[in-house]
Amino acid sequence: MSALPVESVNTHAKTAHRLGPVDAIPVGEARTFAVTGIQVAVFRLRDGTLRATQAQCPHAGGPLADGQIDLMKVVCPLHARAFAFADGRCAEGDQIRIYPARDEAGEIVVEL
Image (tube, rainbow, N blue to C red; front, side, top):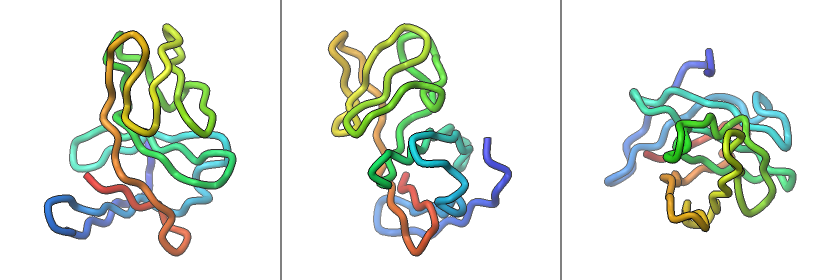
């Protein structure tokens, strides 16, 4: 989990949360943040973009931030279920929540 403070800004129905510097997540890795009581996995892909999902796999509770990633998906480290960053779906029928995430002036911003 992040030790960084979370700053929240309300934007219409969703709230934008500043989670800290983008550099806190090395390229090709992920970190889990607690955001208003919700566990969120934030991924910094190899192309530099950010993606955010729920932190646990719905199949068996695997920590998605510890999974393998590419530009299109995250693979749960427990049972290899691959979830698409586009819509959160996997071939086995499970689905995870996807949250808008972006780099805003060097800060991680996630909307919940």
